[in-house]
Amino acid sequence: MSTMQAVKLVDSEAAGSPELRRFEDIKPPEIFAELKHGVLGQDQALRFVSVAVYKHTTGRMPGNLLMIGNSGTGKTTVMNNIQRLYNEVPEYQPFRAVTIINANLLVDVDRMEFRPSRLLKAVEQRARSLAGHKPSPAALKHAIERATICVDEIDKMAAVVAGKPNAIGVVLQQGLLTLMEGEQLAYQVHAWVDGEEKEVTLDIDTGHMMFICGGAFEGLYDQVYNRVLKPGSGERLRTKTIRTAEGKVRMETYFSLATYLKPKDLFDFGMVPQFMARFESTVLLRDLGIDVLREILLKSFESPFVRTRRFFEVHDIELEIDDLAAALIAEAAAKDSRTGARALRPIFTDLINPYEFDPWHDDKLEARDDGGWRLTVSADMVRDVLK
Image 1: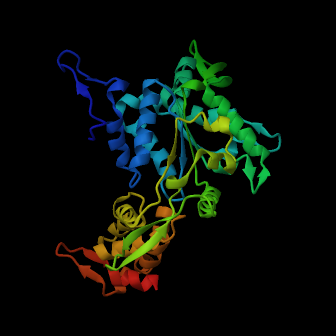
Image 2: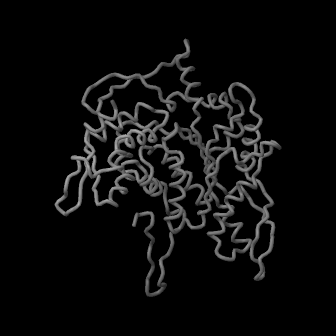
Image 3: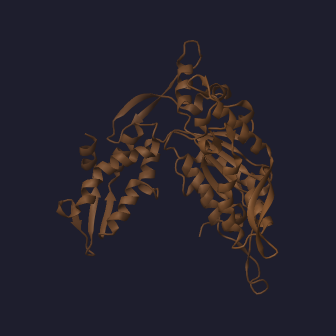
């Protein structure tokens, strides 16, 4: 049991049940520690997320966040782990109505209208599981109003696309802006009243919801990069020393969006200033370096190595990987900074697929003392694939 799941016990003889802590007693450092179990290499971003969750659960303020990061840096992973946090911490039961929805689903393209009902419908489905078998209107309203709304690919709804006005993006940003400011919405549901299921209208106050929007903002990277390189900008790229997995040292020029991003860059990209003002913080997820990618490969539950290890367990084969092999894979994946941790999968899959197909006719399979088998991914195996 993690520290976040622990509850303060009262006198068991007097009460016979655990007493849940106040939301105020679950501090941001505890939230951070729990989120970090599922999100690797993004400590700075998780600190912002932890504070946002604390603000939301204590009712101090919504704590809305905008997350910017390359594909594979962990935006969706952060969203999923907020949901896991709410599910695993007993005190957070009232906040478990979490929905992750793609931005383009919130706009009716034909009518050019923002459709908040689509968002509320997704929240309602989750809220019903919290409110019980025969939910009352009050129970549904309570669960929906405390929801966390995660809107993915928000960058695809910019007000400007390829230098031209994008009306759909304006509609979406204005619609979300209204919800984030706090709007009273009339929303129809089926709920139980006086022992009967009836259609009732709930007055939903969106001001108690937390909104987390995320996107890769791919064009933003090139936009800021070109601005930095422009003569007379007064800025320049930085260099750092790189030590390769094989022990070689080289100097490398690198660009980090977090170092150079300015608010005006987001406005130029196509984010409406009034919409941006509704976020407590803009959080930039760091590009994943070799050390972090190696840790993800070895420890993340969804990493290709960990998933393949579970596959081999079916055949009583213990899959291992030596340190240099893991470093070589991480180093190769790090070269594609635009895909982040996703770059690990094709490298490892190409390597391991022949052994998944037929591990029994290869001299790399070793017998274990306990009667099972062992397959170790070596540096030579990785080098062969990288060639």
